[in-house]
Length: 487
Ligand SMILES: Cc1cc2nc3c(=O)[nH]c(=O)nc-3n(C[C@H](O)[C@H](O)[C@H](O)COP(=O)(O)O)c2cc1C
Ligand SMILES: [Mn+2]
Image: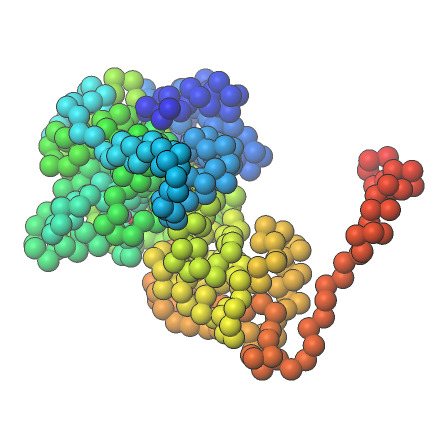
């Protein structure tokens, strides 16, 4: 059963001992950050702050900040379960025999049920304020880090519509609160929200924008999913939940918003207007410096009677977004494998903050295959930002930490095996020669072939025989060899 809303998810977390309510009075200025940071780094629970200085609303944070909670958010018992669910759609074999055909029916029906549903009204409009009455100061928006330019809404679902096609996009783009009714709109230039804004700029008109804060977890997650432009995040959320997202008409904008959201902001962005945004302590672990970004003018604030403000902090990894990143990695791997079929597995270590490091295992079939894979990755969606790609053979375990490093470093002749290219880089990359433009590196750490000019012999890895291992396994307990700290 899909979570109806944020509360349903928080209750489920609480039932499982995965959530702690904090009644102590704390400030949304730095204090909640410090507590949330310590919690995530020690594998702690989700947190709900019930007594936040300066606001009557509770703050929920770290709700996705562990693998277990992330799986729970997506109602999965394991990532393998997801692979099995997707396989039906990615690899539909014509059902053989009547029994197979019957088994396929519920899945097709399930698919029809996941489209968004339009409903009248909704919990997100229990309390409506418009015009001059709008006051973002009533929300417990966090100032996350000491050098931040102000409070930032960090988990918003920014909803926009394409000027030409009318298609809806949902993206998570942080919003610096400037005053009672304006915020920044930090959609980076490669993102779909920015792309749609260019459409309005061409037509020389204002763009309507709605922002949902706090929804059922699959809907929140869909806003960070790197879907191709034009693919609906709300539909993706419905597919994740197994049930369509109920949407309702905004009060002052012609946009559909999640009916069960905690809080919705409605308003507009003038594509020609820019204002200084930042600095902001970012997910790189460094401050993103101030820069000019669009401005969101809020015309209405609608909310539940008793909403919970959902937020997150980013910063020095590992952080909550690292666990969301892992979910993106696992959910999208089957799709990546479909487009780049030699890929057997891939991994984005959390210290690589999504775009700095990707390790890929391939089933190498022809000379230069590793380099072909790098270019395919650099040519695919948001993977274009990957600063470093390391390609290994399929028998290498990507999740092996130091063991992986050992194999990669042993397998390379740097002058021969490093591919350097230029192209677009992530807007948050502060080391590139220019904003959004720089170089990327691929490391071919696969075994080299004769057909690639490698005439030397490649040695075998050292492995004990199975026979001896078995014998020693049996002997081991009686040998009295234990690690010192376990004695
Ligand atoms: C907590 C969090 C904050 C994010 N903040 C931003 C942001 O401020 N600007 C941005 O362009 N992307 C941000 N992202 C990444 C986008 O949400 C992500 O690239 C998403 O796929 C964008 O949707 P789109 O493809 O529809 O543009 C953030 C992601 C997370 C998890
Ligand atoms: Mn999108």
